[in-house]
Image (cartoon, helix red, strand yellow):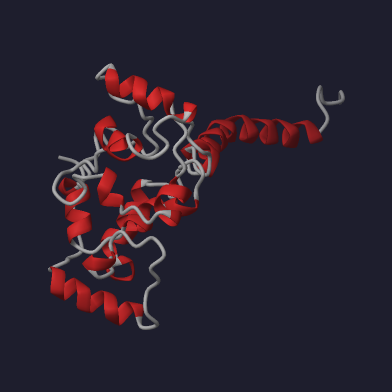
Length: 217
């Protein structure tokens, strides 16, 4: 009887090789899906460079300017809006009005050109988000945007993934605060945050929202 062409262990090697080849696509897809949820892929914790240097620490924390002074439509429209150059010049026509640091602000103002601010939070076109409804239901600015008053350059601190949003829509109570504290970035919830949140939910008529049409219209 002649010896087999291949040794017995080659059968095991062949099966193992086939399993690896078949598993590689699945592993690759899984790896990509996991990476897509990491901070680097979501561009989290990376300051967004703006056309002008604007330090929120100075304007918000030191001076005490309310978020709504610049983001004027946050309570009434889907978009929070950004300050027109006239708002900047309303102060800086009198304060630091000859500083070379503000030359570009003056340039945009006198040329009647909007400052090309870069967006920090960008949602896909298939997602509908309304700032006004969230703010008027007791969701504070810091819940999504973090402590902007402590950022020299604003960065994205929350992932805004579908699962992140749905978690809040399923259980909104821990994220609710009194409307008068909406723009208070340093506000902290009371010890009984859950009970307080449920009371605010009753007061502001907040309900869980998990249907697809809530965000995809």
